[in-house]
Image 1 (cartoon, rainbow, N blue to C red):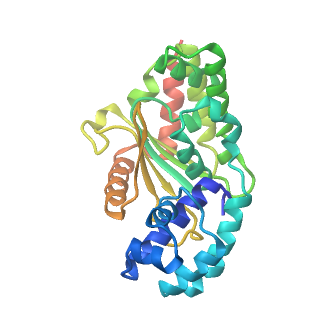
Image 2: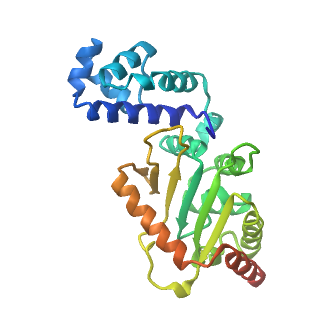
Image 3: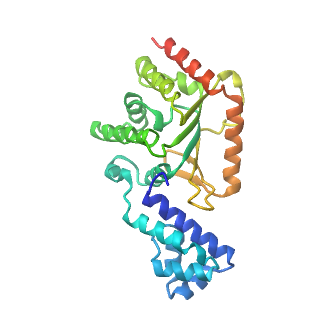
Amino acid sequence: MSSGSPTALKRWIAFELRAMREEAGRSRPQAAERLGRAVTQIGHLETGRNLPSLPDVEVLLAWYGRPERVEVFRDLIRRARKGRDWWIGFTDAMPEWFGLYLGLEASAVEAASYDAVHVPGLLQTAPYAEAIIRAGERALSEAEIARRTELRMARHALYERQQDPLRVWAVLDEAALRRQVGGPAVLRDQLHLLAELANRPNIDLQLLPASSGAHAGVEGTFTLLTFPPELEGDHGVAYVETRVRGIYYEDPAEILLYRQALTRLQVQALDPEESRDAINRIAQEMT
């Protein structure tokens, strides 16, 4: 697995416990009675608030007719308890709700996105990130801006790591690449970084030209996270971020809608090689 993020593991364990209970035709009250627990405790297990004990997992999986999965659950529960999310030292530099996304991103094998307004945070330079953060929340102190920028830069390690680097596939709207965030010089350096990143085997960047007209991304930016096969039954997540919170779409039918939209955008966009050339041309225009 790409990462032993406790946040991601807790989410998957909760997701699977609920799915297996429903497939077995059992209710939460029945599961609570089986374990001798309160119904609210079963709810906490199925929402990821709490991790189940190993004995409780053995009882539930046998009762759900899936005893063969006990060993997998034992391993993941142990890892969730012993693991440490890489971003724990940055809790002062982000809203509380963003922690779940960072945990999921760290455990994903691929992050695919359409970016309508600006370069995605995962691929930003420090000056570009600072300009975005500064413009977004004017009440932040200089120290807070610096910490948030540092957090954003730390995310680069996901696609730079030697073992199982994150695969990134981003469709970037031309308007996002021409918006002079931080001024021409900052944007030029940001575009140079994108051109360099496009040479990495695990990163594909596509530019969606303004001449494309109306397209499947008119509703705005979104990200699709895909998880490793180890997390059996996990269809991934479609993520949309607002000023107030992150929104996670986990229903397979909803995820499919976002995947279909992204596929259409990838078809409309320039191919990766053409996109790299276009990014370099835009950079040359910045004076």
